Amino acid sequence: MDMNFEKLVSVIIPTLNEEEGIEEVIEDIPEEGLKRLGYETEILVVDGGSSDETVEKVKEKGVDVFQAGEGKAEGVRLGFKEAQGDYVFLIDGDGSYPGEKIIDMVNELENGCDMVLGSRFAGEIQQGAMTTKNKIGNKILTFLANRLYGTDVSDLCTGLRGMDRNVLENNKVPGRGFEIEAGIHTVFSHENISEIGIRYDKRKGTSKLKTVDGLKIAGRLFKGKFKKR
Ligand SMILES: Nc1nc2c(ncn2[C@@H]2O[C@H](COP(=O)(O)OP(=O)(O)O)[C@@H](O)[C@H]2O)c(=O)[nH]1
Ligand SMILES: [Mg+2]
Image 1 (tube, protein in one colour):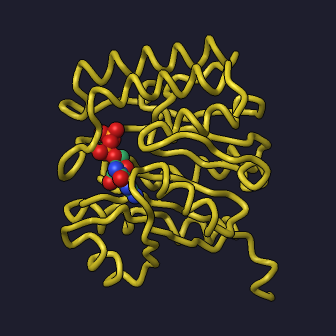
Image 2: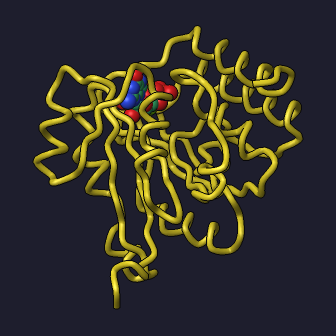
């Protein structure tokens, strides 16, 4: 079969100093399972200037690394620009999300949704994987997103999601840094969103998220709703 007729799944991994988890994240992407569904897999690591061994480890695995500007959002947007897949996935590079779930998520997208979330709150959160403060923050932000945008999701900020590339091509995704998931929500709120429950594990390495980011995410949700971009 001509390569041009293969279906393609892109998996974007944003990284900043994830030398402890990145290899495992790449290994857990179910390329074989996707092949059985008829998809080639393209992995894109978008790095925000790691000072540890992240980039070397990714290259050793034969995976492409793109150098992005500062902040998670710049990395993700660069990934969106480079990704060629029919479906575009995002997964954090810290080992906290189950890559094997991409198979079930592709099924959801094939069944007609435009974005599928891997929901931690509809799944299970392992002991020590999320602080109580972050749990409350995530719940409040998710509630706010649903109230403002008329959606019904259970995990706004999840770091594992799959999207139809057509929607990404036709819309600019707004937001800086950790606002990116809220920015994606503002774009997909007019589309068909589904979710599957996932297990959330304790991350490898250290979190980059700060308390103030929660406020910025809320700000992004309000801006997207009430301000012309
Ligand atoms: N490219 C890029 N990725 C980032 C940046 N900051 C964080 N990340 C990545 O975004 C993902 C989520 O960050 P993390 O610190 O785990 O946040 P949390 O999961 O919300 O606690 C991880 O894979 C990080 O390596 C950045 O400035 N640039
Ligand atoms: Mg994390």
